[in-house]
Length: 465
Image (cartoon, rainbow, N blue to C red):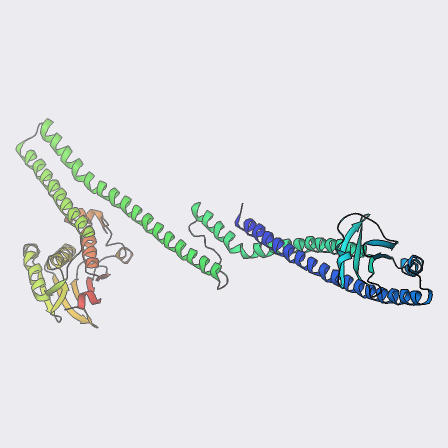
């Protein structure tokens, strides 16, 4: 059973109970008021009859001296019989006149002082009996009058309330259904959104209307759906990146392994001279060296993805001097020079990781530069932060490749990269090291003119002393 159906039945049930109890109480009170009014009228009639009859009997006795009252009472009672009022007169406990119903049983109205009223059912009709002592000779008078209209009134009132209850229940039912459908509309939209998202429509959102609890619930659901959608997109992107990474790694491993396998088979089975043997061994050595570089870079990249660094002050001039000294052999081989400009003195970071970052950047600059070129290492203040920069005047990077250059295994020119020994992990490692320092890596390049790689240390994590 749905929520709106449960609410509908509960509200309708509670209303009907409350309405019926109220109607019953009102019906009972109305009947009691009418009964009291009927008794009041009966008592008034009884008083009038008692006074009149006492007067007539007193006059009759004074004039005639007779105590035979039956004839006088009969004549008096005949006048009220037409009004459905019946009389009984008792002397002590002896009935001396009656034109009313006679029945056995307790008669409390005979003991009324000054009077007593009782309702009785006589021949399926309701009668009111009122009795008490008369002023004359201590006679007892009982009148009975038809009050069946009270029963008719009660039946009519009960039918009216039953009809009213049915009509109001129908109106309430219709109003409740409309109202509950309106109130539960946000729930249905929310349920529809949940089903849509469960079916894979992660862009589905619920229309959030109003500032009530339903509107807040819809807004919270939309925020949750946004978070889930973003998380799924992140997972999807990570999965795609992982697949690309594995495919690129497989591709990078395949070339040297195939070459090593081919040259080893050549050495094992072919007839060759000493010069061919040295050539095969040299190629095997070169590809093993490439695999060694690849495995080292891979280990470094995996290490960086799981590492958290502790930042400390690093003198920038010492950092640049160390990098220049580590790359001196490559620089001498291409007759290149490094020029250092240190306007900023220090930066907060991990010294070993920063050394690795700038060694990778300088190696890329050496590979991209021609013989006799120059590489500039610079540091300067940028607002409240510090920027460290590597600038070369080599072949540059095409604009279309700059956005992807920091992806693992991405290379601009694969044939050129293999010739220079590149595997496309250097800038990916640099970008990861920058992220560990909560810094940003920015590449600015123009093809065949220059490449500038800037590392911006501008967050409070780098600026703390």
